[in-house]
Length: 300
Ligand code: UTP
Figure: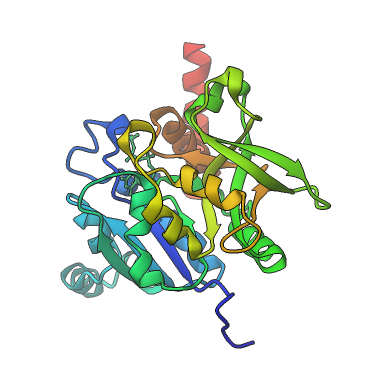
């Protein structure tokens, strides 16, 4: 099947945030480069994009984010040194990020919010729908979400967000959705969105997580969106405008995700994913699990 302007070919990954929740680690190192066991968080996200067949990726970066560009570039000196040692295993690890996708980089300048970061990719994306993935949000590769979102976009058009049920106590940390059921159990129609509502006025306990499939009209809406909460241009505000439309970027549907998702920008969640993935690894898993059992036995 050839490409038409309705198919999704490109992905946008905003990585320009300051990562203040993870200071001081993120003073000079981007939070997206923090290792999850032995691979930086951003590589998991790029592998997720490659797994659904998208190859054109634009990362929205800023000052202090050079390490991300270097990670997806060749490393000739390192590769030569590993070649000289016949270390084929490590050579593959060094080369893998370079072959996953075609990365492009645009700079955000000032970190004026997620909506503004997405808008910085407008020129590269053009008049096509696109996927957007937050660089610090990890979805377990065994729980495919993006493929399902692309399917919903093909079936229903408009824009698609990923939603997750959270404890009502935690709704105020996220963008929260008002929804209506559809004829598919995992798909809802989003009728409204509100950024970080107090729990008393939250429309549901379904919150937006870091995966989106957006119609290009979102750029026009973002250009008109004034700074909202915290003086930032919020993607949630733009999605709220699209949710009211039938056509021209709307409607907005939500795929309700029930799999494993981790916000690596949050210290506690970061630790849980590192421990979980380390336990599941064939190489270090058995020894690490043994140590962990003994440690928990001693301290609890
Ligand atoms: P977050 O709010 O989680 O990122 O934004 P942050 O601002 O870096 O984190 P804290 O709260 O200070 O710790 C979600 C995603 O949007 C990107 C971030 O890099 C992250 O991947 N982002 C956010 C931008 O690219 N630009 C912005 O202006 C804001």
